[in-house]
Amino acid sequence: MAKSKVGILTAGGDSPGLNAAIRGFGKTAIGYYDMELVGFRDGITGLVENRHEKLGSNRLSGILTVGGTILGTSRDKVNKFPTADGPVDMVPTVVENYDRLGLDALIMLGGGGTAKNALRLVDAGLNVIHLPKTIDNDIAMTDTTFGFATATEIATEAIDRVHSTAHSHHRIILTEIMGHRAGWLTLAAGIAGGADIILIPEIPYSVESVSETIKQRTKRGSTFSVVAVAEGARDVEDAADEQAARLLVKNAKTPEAQRAARTHLKHVEDTQREHTFKLARELESATGLEARVTILGYVQRGGSPSAADRLLATKLGTAAADLVAAKEYGVMVASRGDGTEPVPLTEVAGKVKLVPPDHGWVTAARKVGTGLGD
Ligand code: F6P
Image (cartoon, rainbow, N blue to C red; front, side):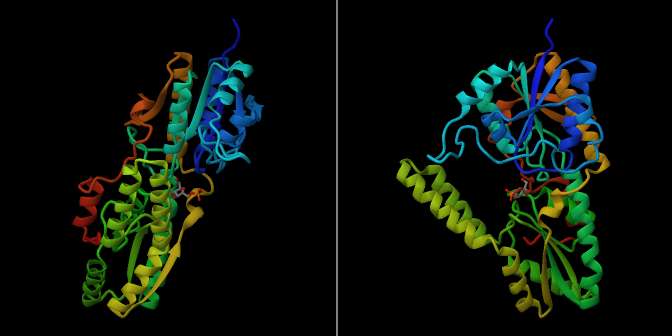
């Protein structure tokens, strides 16, 4: 009987653990199930342009601890692929490439955008399995995503480190943490790093509340404060403006109205981009303390995955190979406790997992006296 042939790609923003997942899947597929493995270069781009390489055991050796992705990545969308003539639906091209290569399945490692691309390919008849990766931890229907644990370690260490310099200079230090529109990373690192105030998108803040927390600390003799700010956190007014702009996009009926609403949303997003610096200025004038900003940025996505992410990526990767062997497709491999569970992509694509305001981490933060800005 001919060997099963499987394609694999990494898409969206990179994150620690991608190589560990490629290895987990590949070693199981090749060594345990005797399958053939092909890696597409640069995510959806390589899938569309049919750029691929054969992945043998040698290529999978020594990558467990390596950051980034050996396959490269991109943020392209399969249905709106950028070309010189504008965005084109490349689903038929991908189907053609898949058939010509004689693939039995395609494994897509990525975040929310990748789940949507995966579902588009499932709808076109391909056998696709998605593995949840992102430092943002915002994918629905899975306990967690690989990349998140490592990024939490990195952001926690950063918060630890700014404490001493904030203390020495009697300053407020605001540390901006990634997470897109979800607050998981900031909340986790903020709690673990002992931030005095944690600001997340799910709980719009008031500058008065934040400055009041800082003033109370000063009264108690702490002349410095460490604030963990999510990149998506907004004060109450800005959050309302952004929400209204998103609603306009959602409700726009005609292509012209859509275009106008999108332009407006982009304008709102652009004007809010420097929100952490704006907050720093506002806190300086409200408290009389000096304020400084540290943007952690891409440091959070780089470098070797933590033990927890290596373990998670290996668990999900090997489970995906089991699903290929069982011919179970059209699913994301969710992490559930110590195990895994296949979840239909229809229940994942287009959904975002945000921090519920009554989440255990939120209540724990409040109980230890951390300000949440509300
Ligand atoms: O999704 C991961 C993430 O790092 C987000 O936290 C951040 O908003 C975004 O990607 C940055 O995207 P890019 O790599 O395209 O700049």
